[in-house]
Length: 154
Ligand code: ZN
Image (tube, rainbow, N blue to C red; front, side):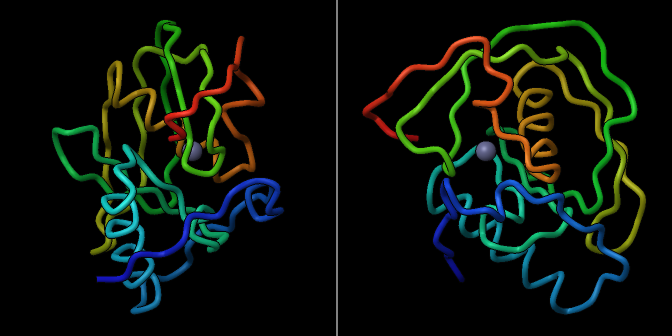
């Protein structure tokens, strides 16, 4: 098990556009495993590779129902609108209210290189959008309609 330190602002890797994975090799599998271990160690709902210092297009998510990992995720459909509360391990001490699509469909590939299609509603839709934004250097504080300090520190 490898728990990494989570990168926090103002680290510039959080603002970079992450690169797609061209080939799934041992290094990619290792990154996936490290992301999973790190997300669970910090009780996160999701984690994007830049948050452990790897500027690649990989996200992991667990909203409490299923563990999901997606390589080269891409939102192919968005529907509806919701406003919800968000925090981020990379932006400690701040929470905000963010407008998101209520439902998304995301395509990508899994660690075996198989194509995936994931449909997320509500919490999973929020997590997918939040994590995929990280791959383009976008943080929830950039798009939040309101932010405030939170001592519980996500
Ligand atoms: Zn985040």
